[in-house]
Length: 419
Image (cartoon, rainbow, N blue to C red; front, side):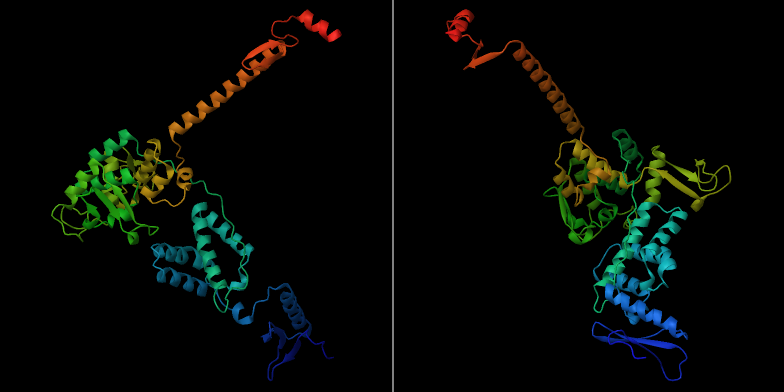
């Protein structure tokens, strides 16, 4: 029996035992193999496709076969083309976590339920909410790039949930701890690194990439070139006395393109984790723990199980704590939030919420205002009570009881009222 026009058709290709459906989508003829030998099952597939067309969620067969792996390739290519500094992190997130779960999956099969299953699997692996959010952000970026390509590889975007993060940072370098840390720093370059990070809150990578030409001893300023910062914004700051003395020694006798921070043998500083840990342990601001028995290690190996080297882990103050401390110290000194953000390279004021930074002077001012408001309220209540007990008219600045006129009496006022 002939089908009504616009409802598609079902047929078998020559030499094929399964049914193929045919219908029109957006002015284009679509032929799709159903893989079904039963006519009624093929009919159900055709009905489902026509329903998807009516709802606007239809995905063409060519697009339906595209895998998430292809979106990941486009995503990483976009990072490399735009010179993203975090391309290595993006590749690692895809390779270690996203690819094993989504790599072979077809785009059309990735739904909100699929993403929820991924979240469950990562939570079972003891991944933190913040880590999962970064992975989902990368996956979301892949789908958005595929959605905006021509022709589109993604027909609809699933919901990407965001897990709650408890990201209030608590690590700070107190003044007494800072003195201990600088005293334990054995080399000039490490002492200078700590001083600059503690003063301006600049990031580790920004400091290690500094060249001698960026230190201007004549004008007493140091600057970061735009291409060397995380957000590609150049910064310049006036050197304090301590920073100027330390950096002056670091750049002495060097060429303009030489790195500022170099080891005693002249090699540029690339990784100083061991030097940092050694200084923190010597200052009593950190300790080494055994990964096997979780006991503190005082020497090079664990006395309990004999573990050493990579079997030990560090716990204590980290270099990024100096960045948080700089923001807090500037805020306590009364520096405006906008100026702090310019110095440290923060684009939004969320740094003050994330680091839980509030100026003590702001708290004092707030409490003083609260006390003053309470005192004003009590005074108004007292004055209102006096007025109720002694009602008055006010003539200029002088107040007289009701019914009294200047030079009169209550009796005279009452007599005039009766007449």
